[in-house]
Every structure is written in C-alpha cells, then in structure tokens.
Image 1 (cartoon, rainbow, N blue to C red):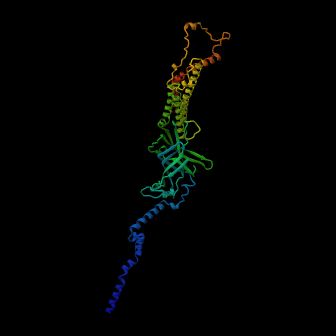
Image 2: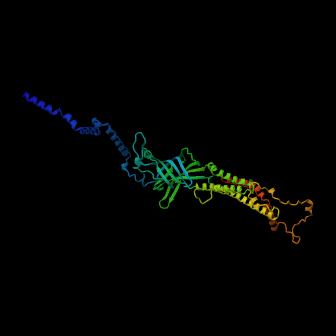
Length: 472
C-alpha cells in the first residue's frame, strides 16, 4: 500500500514537471499572442500585459479612427456643399502676398506667391469639445470633406507647394467653422499699356472666383474688408509698388449665370534710372557727337562722312536693341518717340553736311567758270581736303569797292524802266527775295555750319523739354 502510494506520487511529478518549459519552448508565439490579446481587450479590466511596440501602432490607429468618428465624416455626403438647397453659403477670403516673383513685359504676365485662406461654416463637421479647442489637419483630411473650388481667372500656370509635404492646412472648430489655408504660386495675365513706356505705370490684378458654384450657391467676400489683403515687404528690380488694394464684383457667363469675383489690385510704377543709363544717355551722347561735324572743316569729306555714318549706325543699334526686348505692339511708345526723333537729328546732321558740300561745290564751279580761279586749280583736290589747302591759296579777284558817292549816282530802281514797278507785297517780290537768300547761302556755304552749331542744340533742347514735361 505504501509502495503503491509512493509510485503514484512519482508518476504525478514526472508528468507535471516538463509542462512549463516545454510549453514555453515549443509554443513561444502562442504565449506572446495570448499576452497581446489580453493587452488589447482586457488591459483595463484584468490588468493584462501590453507590448510597447504594439501599443504605439495601435494607439495611433485608434486616434485616427476617433478623429474621423468625432467629425462624423462617414455619416455625411461631402460631395455637396453645406446647406444644400438653401441660401448661398458665405465663404470669406483673405490673402497674404509673400512675393511678386517676376513681371514680364514680353509675355504680359506676372508671377506671385501667396497664402490663400478660406473661411466658412459646415455644421456637418461640428464636434463636442470640453475645452473649445480647434483641431488642425493636413492635406490628407482635406480630400475627404467639401472645400470651396476657388480658381484664378486668367491664370496661365499655378501650383501648390509640396515641399516637404503639401502646403495645406485645415483647422476645424467645435462649432463647425473652418479655416482652409493653402500656399500657391500663380502666373496670371496682366494687360499692360506701353504707350508711355518706360515712363509708365501698370495696373495689374489677380482675380479669384468659384468655378462651379454661382452666386445662388456660394458667395465669396473679403473676410476683413480692406484688411483682408496683407503683404510682406516686397522689392522689385524694375518697379515701385505704389498700392495694393482688394475689390470685388460680379462676372457673368451666358451659360452658367452670375459669379462673385474678388480682385487683388496692385499699381506698379517703373524705375526710370535703368533706362536712363541703358537708352536715354547713350542716345543723347550720339546726338551730341553728330554735332561735332559742324566744327570740322567743310572740305574734310572723309572725317565728316565717317562721323555721320558712325552715329547713324549706332542709333540704329540702340533702336534695334530696345525693340527686341519689348512686345510687338501696334502703337507708338514713348521711348520710340525719343529714339526716332534723336535718330532724325543725327540723320539731319548728315544731310546738313551734304548740303554744305553741294553748295561749296557749286560755289567753286561758278568761280572757276567766271575766271576767278587759276587754270591750274583742281576743284576736286580742294573738296577732298587733306589739311594743306586753304581758301587764301585761291587767287580770287576782289570785288570792287562801292563808295558812297558812286552808290548815290546809281539809279534807285534796278528794273527795266519800261516795266512798271511791282507793287509792294506781290508774289514776284517774295520770289525774288527767296532767290536772293538762296544765292547768298550758296555763295556763303560756310554759314550753314555756323547756324547749325546753334540751331541743332537749341532744337534738341526744346524737344527734350517738351518730351519730359509730357511723359514724366
């Protein structure tokens, strides 16, 4: 009996001793899974053990589900606007302009980077909150709810910044008010008027409008009136920004109706100093350089012709360079008036020498035919002046002196006594006076240079006074 009891105890110990080690060694995954199971479901009730890594993943998943459930996203159809079937939903807008990146005269557009913020109320997203604090989300939740479909009218290119993630923010308040902010760079059309270029001012605007919802469904308005448009300190290379102001209006489309439209207006005034250095000062110098020929001897043909042609070609180069950097408009710009008038002054200085050369040649030929020039004199050599020939080398017979007594003995009227004297102020008298003036100029061609030295600068100075008073 005693032996039987001892054997039964040994058998019982032999059967129970390897259970714990073998169970832990053969089924480690099952035991670990059991611990996790207790941690997920019975941790608060039974004080089960929770693995740290699994707790981190599960808590994040649980928090996301709670946020979506809190906002009741799955309970509503966000493909339709808030208050569908009722009055138009008001959507407030405010804009903060970060920078104006570029303004292109050739393409007639501008590029702007801005923060665009929308404000509206959607009761479907209201949630209970004990501390009345808002919840902030990124672009992942924006795709699941309704947002206004605001677009930029006359936009050529635009994009939302996405570094390091999409620059989109959604903030939801417990009462259902929503702030939706996005950072955008947009290139839009600006219809520019270059009639006063480069002394011009340009008025450009960026226009915002709902694409699908007309004024019966969505009402766009500036959130804080004139304070809805804010700008950082913006510096541009070619323009002063004189003013930034918001405005609003209505746009009509024949197929879809009336839409609310918001405007961001800004007035730009161009810097003139750049164009003074690149265009106006070189042009003035070329015109003044063309006047140097008036002080060169009229018989120095190579010097005066080469100077005139050089200034003409330089003016042509300046005009071509300015035209290449401007749009091909069908009207005359202010810079065109200045350049072409200056070109005309340079061209007239060349024509002036052509007139002087011609009258000098005619004068020399008359003297040669009249016997006042020696037979050995070469008129061609005189005109092709090489610095060795002078007027005093020509043997000219002096004009007879007219004394006072001889002048008194001359008849008072040079015309034929048989002809009646012409009445004063008749056309014949004026014609004779013009002919005398031409004869006098042809016989004294050097005086053309003398008059040009004063007339050309005075005329150009008068032109500059009129030009700058009109366009400045």
